[in-house]
Image (tube, rainbow, N blue to C red; front, top):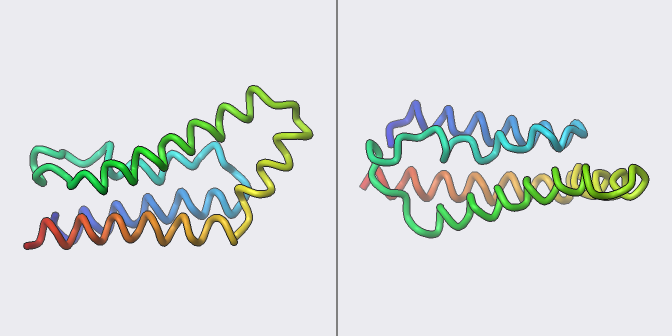
Length: 109
């Protein structure tokens, strides 16, 4: 993975986390966008840990969106307050960056 695609992927991950901090969990899919947009055959196949990482984040994003439609508004507001709290978003951001950096480093070698 070259440096420019890594920077673009890092920008998308950061945009997804900032959207959570600003209280917009609907835009959380930006966190998983780098894996979807990357041409996996061009950059080799990502390691299984990275795929598991992004599938977990994608599953979480789908669960958040499902909560929006399945729960009453008052219950979703409390879920949204927890999801958009910095104590939740910052570790999620670090976890996603760790996965990106690990993938970047593996493709460099």
